[in-house]
Structure formats: structure tokens, C-alpha cells
Image (tube, rainbow, N blue to C red):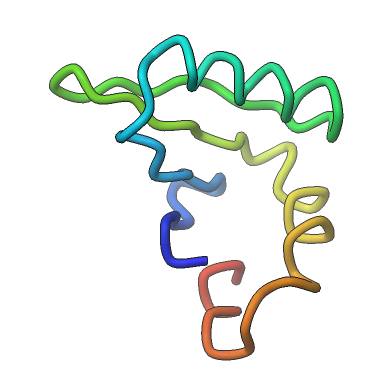
Length: 76
């Protein structure tokens, strides 16, 4: 719950500890299994996943039941 943040209408998953290939695999799974539109963002050779604005409603529906009440602000 704490490894992500809403930004620009979408949501960043802080997956910088994963390689580019691992992030691409995660994106493919998010797209295939959950129909989430995602892109790979790179900063200084570190990669993280961005869930696009168009997929935020679906993303919220998927994760909200698992969020602790104190962390729900991240989805607003």
C-alpha cells in the first residue's frame, strides 16, 4: 500500500527494485489479467510502472478491498 502514489490522474507503482524485464513482465500481467493500461517509466536507469488515468477506476476497484483505512487517501 505504501509503494505507490497517485500522480497526473494515474498511479505509480514503485517497482524500481525490479529490472526492466521484470517490470515489463508485470505490465503484461496487469494488462492481460486485469485489463489495466500501463506504461514503463524510467528515471536514472530505474524503472517503475505507471497505471494510466483510463484504468484508475478499475485499479481502485481491484485494490480498495485490501487497503488499510489509513492508506485510502492514496486512491483519492
